[in-house]
Length: 66
Image 1 (cartoon, rainbow, N blue to C red):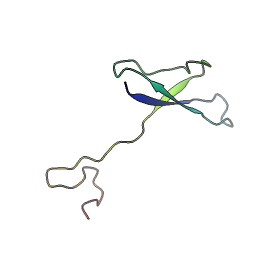
Image 2: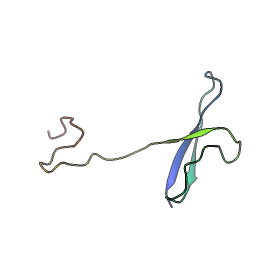
Image 3: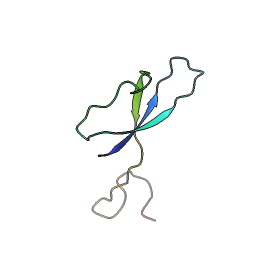
């Protein structure tokens, strides 16, 4: 089962968001509330890789071919 990162959505802009990690099935819907506090949360996209194109360069358009 994958681990997803969520962060709280503070109602007051001066508050800092906190992050939690949640083990969820890949087919489970994303959480909308913190499982313990009920605060609204959003899923945070982390990691990832740049996939090479057929000519060997990154698909992002950056100069990653050297």
